[in-house]
Image (cartoon, rainbow, N blue to C red; front, side):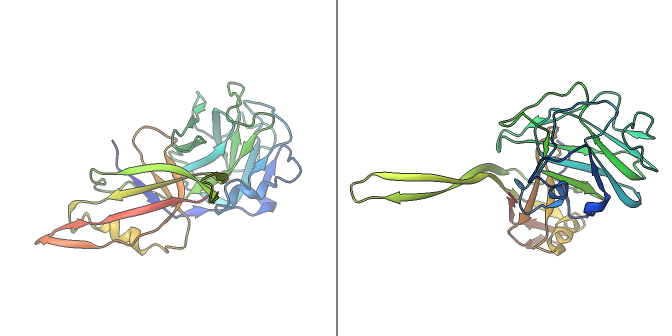
Length: 268
């Protein structure tokens, strides 16, 4: 298992710099950068696949050395990412950067039931980035009539921790509900919203040098969106979340500390 990744170093793109093939009424393209409301998503007005024509592409105003892109709550099972110094409009087959000859698989997160993917971008340094749903893709999830993307997260940086979290990591998802209990014992219950992931990460014994991972995390604004990736081989295990706890380290001996647990809650 590789070490976990945290980052809030996210690049967003203005609506005017987002180009799409089409947009269904009520599902604006800029919704992909609304991280506080996952289901306020973008929906294309078709289910067209192409190895060269992207469903969506971005002008980031200048060349960016992105380390990764995260796609959350999509309804396609394959994707290709391309990059170039200029816009290639509807044909990106000759782009300088491609995520690979083989399309990247988008997997279903067992906890939330949504299709998410963390895609590392090696040596990406381009102004323009395109998302393609290739010919090999299939529609997945509960809605399969037109392509959808919940979130697009462009990561400017994001390095693995120097020491991983300790044993005892717990994670899962739940759906909020409202309940009416009658004196007869009858219960009426209504579900509210979507499945929401949360996780509690335990940080055990580490050196004060390794503690820098946690103090850096703690210094990030607790009100800001945070991307957390388990980095354990399953690329669907990536979450757009808020940190609910602060870090505190307890000295055990000279140069040795033990950390507390930190809870994360997904933004849906």
